[in-house]
Image (cartoon, rainbow, N blue to C red):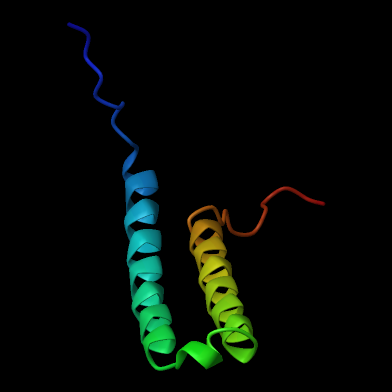
Amino acid sequence: MTDTAPPAQPPAESELRAQIRALFLAEADKVADLLNSKDDSQLLGQTEFQLRDALQRAGARALELALQGRKKGATKAPV
């Protein structure tokens, strides 16, 4: 029998994963509220744009989270 457990993730990676997961779960609640608030006749059109905007905001925020963990600060060597 072989061990199929995934390798342990570095703490920074698992923290980022947890932050992004929480971000998208919160956004999923907003998306569900948006879709539940619309009649069948309103699901296409403007609602599609609202949905796309919400998901793009979540993606942009996820990118910001990833970049925050990678910032190195000012360079010390002359440029």
